[in-house]
Image (cartoon, rainbow, N blue to C red; front, side, top):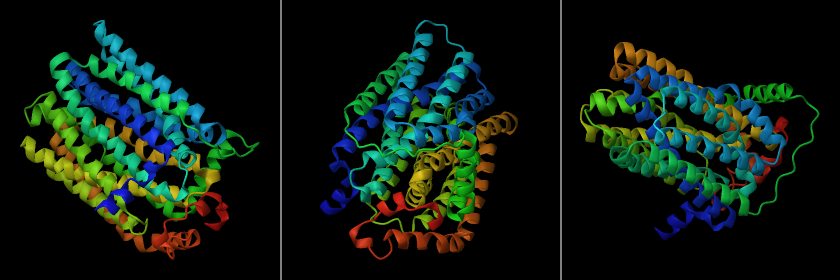
Length: 437
């Protein structure tokens, strides 16, 4: 048991990552508090599932349109400086929401504009933070562990943040949640200022930005494992992630609860995802993750489908717990594989494609699900989404044999297959030229 614990948290031996871990934990709790508060505020102001969908669309569409430019920035500029800027802007956005609440001037249009602003910031922040991890990690063989622990961090916040938000909203309203989130950014900003890293030399380039984006898209399209993984993520984001958006509808109108019920559901999803992240962190090897991703996609869809028929709060929470577990396995497993097989020269841009797949497709799903839920109801909408997710997982599983034939030779060149017992040798993945793929 002690060995398993050390294996799971081995990356925390690094001072840099330990500081990032603590700062990110505080920030993520605040972020999830704000997400719950925004959903409850919009539904309170409008009583409209469509407006929930619109807010989701507005906040996430920049990840689809702007993330590729964020990837170019991540490959060209000092990633720490970019993150300091994006975190500061995110803090200002949260404090502005708190200001409008406390002054009694908040409208849904304030939420829409500020949600769009945060989406723009996130489009640059996410690919940069993903690519920055390679500079934070002191032992490159710990990269897989770091990715899994980062996913766990998000979901610790997802577990704790909604539970706190539910209590605060019921007692004091949404404004305190926005204020706490704004202040929580100070933790990660301070962390970024005090860590000591040796930045990876930025590649000299005379290419135009659009040329670099086309280069990355062509690279991802030609290498089938990257293409298939991004395709799986895109569909799951499009038809699967709207279940989070519709949670306020289920909490209030389907399960006849209040903010506490919403907090319970979100926390249950976060707990499942947290346990999934710890499971991935305890793994010694990436081998078999592609199979786990296919299985998780199917389980995720089945969970949403069953959840849509539940009318019990505690049963719904249990189903969402399983759904959260499956979602994280599929997302973080895909992220891990991508980080290992991508060439360092393309890292920021490929991770921007990951952002497009995971976040960029979500706004279209949010908008579509909001429209459909207005017409046929949230339960029927989620039932359709769940079925489509199951079919997506089955289709990915069907392609697994072909995908493995191309991934395993890469693993062999990295030393993963013959040297599983001594750890993953990711340094080769970070320096090899793209033609080796």
